[in-house]
Length: 172
Image (cartoon, rainbow, N blue to C red; front, top):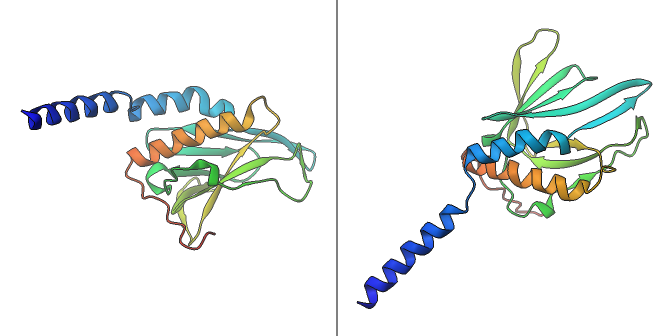
């Protein structure tokens, strides 16, 4: 009888816990509605208006740059999953060619796909220790809080897409 109660309790607990988890579709919908608003950056670079914007798709994030000659795709499965997003590095470029100066978060990835605007074909770039920069405006209200939400959603999409956990063996 005690075993039956234990099994019943465990099953009810598992059902309760699993009912609170967001599905891939719900997470993607949230990213489409909110991620592009929080994760973007408009600036003037050497007198020209530029921007970094992000589109969230079922399998990848697309980074669109209005000034650089490439667009990038980062597939969720190629992002290394980090449970504690607080350890992600943020950076501000040391040079002042940008007005305003951007802030970006560095996420560890295996590879990304990029497309030259000249020929329109996508190619993969793969390097050891590759980190991709996600640009955002740190001056917007609640910027870091909102970026943390976006990063948690991206990591959730990566996990649901079968991405590997990040292993920082040497604290780099």
